Image 1 (tube, rainbow, N blue to C red):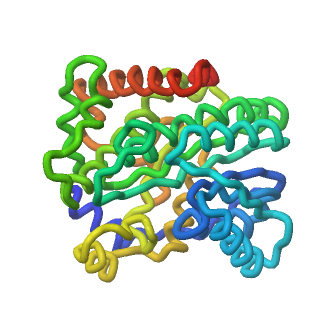
Image 2: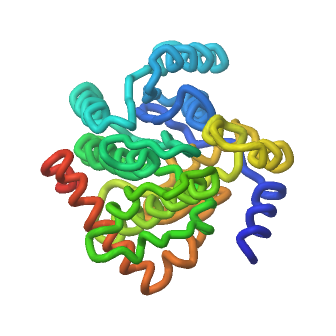
Length: 328
């Protein structure tokens, strides 16, 4: 089945069940959760008895508004907490992780939902903003939270999960930067397009999600589920009503009108991935099932690129926080 037909079938016919897993006693972090899918995922976690759900948000004011809404709809108090996190700043990411490692008794699920889909070229932390937020900060946060999650696994005899929200667009990513000389993929990704526009910036978003999928696979390649206490997985929520593509053009408005899932259904998919176990380690999930990633990721060339991305990313992370990748 082609990508296009598979996408249409998923959007129009796939049945996505409501979460039924109990999260009693569990502590959960959801990034980018003041609106959209992250907020709805947080609501589902609270509805299903989570003890603590941390909304990791850039705007504390908007986070507090989201907390108030979730509290009201679920009839709960003192479950939702609002913590500051700005994924465009490595300092903010590290401060957030340090707080979590210090203050939390346990950490069962980290849902890395925060992301950007830009139409304009901008630089955050010396890299193009899409790569900074969707890739580098995402895995900087994941690795920085691993000490608490590994401690949780040992202390409470559970298997925590780190879920990265990817996209079905990774199937159609055009990734010419993968042919860069050894050690130069991220440098090529930081080379400004001669004419940045909606088309090449949409592709950049797709590339960032392809990298997320490949890095997740690389982690499982190095730390298989049988010998590592934390599950890493990634998923696509499909096309949903959210604020992610708020900078995009009219074509996205039309597509959403005819095809988009509700935000609440998108939240269900995030919760499913976050509550999945070792069978999902290193896997890409679609419609609450393990699915094959982009064909490129399964080729010999793709595997070589995956390893190159891993080497470059870990070197970059070590430059930001020496020793952080040893948490793996």
